[in-house]
Length: 120
Image (cartoon, rainbow, N blue to C red):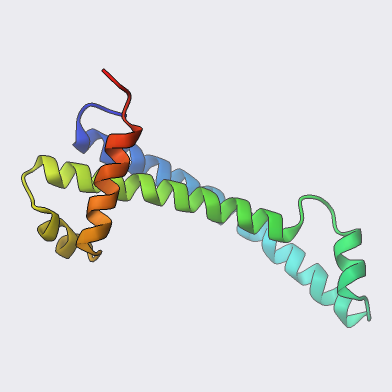
């Protein structure tokens, strides 16, 4: 983790943008797969046949993998924001109000950062 909480916000923001760009790029593939599934159903294919004959990775695998990437990048960004705001002197309640999250969530994000930081 970066020593400066503000820099960690920028690093995590870059990571979040990259993940979202990857998701956007996959949208074309997802649309193509969705169209193929609709065509197969219109032709009378069962979902069993559609899934068995589908190329790997399956559509559901693509969606799941990308949701996990977005969740991880979003979590890293939220945690970095909380730490940067704490470093600027804001209280847990002030941070919660500013970020529109509960003060309990702010506390958890702060604890996560402490648990994940390497020992000196």
